[in-house]
Length: 135
Image 1 (cartoon, rainbow, N blue to C red):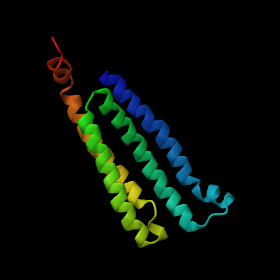
Image 2: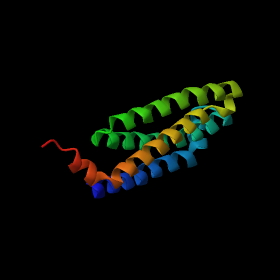
Image 3: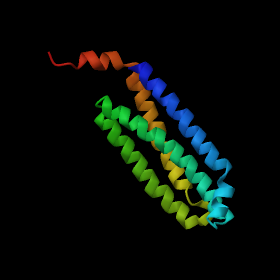
Image 4: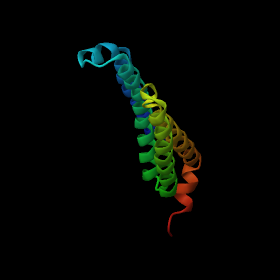
């Protein structure tokens, strides 16, 4: 199970990373075709990084749900939602060039917390699996 989890996350990193990288590299051409300016191109690139982190965050959240770590999943969602509200509110007031950075920060915080929890539960997977079984 641990091997499948690691292999799946590495595969996700390759595919999502390649797709995000291509979109970041060709953002100028894509957004020129859509008649959008340079500020929107910067926001698009920043948001792509946020989406990249969000995909991993949601994958790790799924792992927490699979391991039945509902409390850790709940706190991870609370951290993401609260930081997204706070950081985005601050960035909206800062101007258009900062749009998207609140989302990136929130995705990073949620990803970090979820990664720490998944790593911790991964270390104690056998204990958690067998010690809490009903006899």
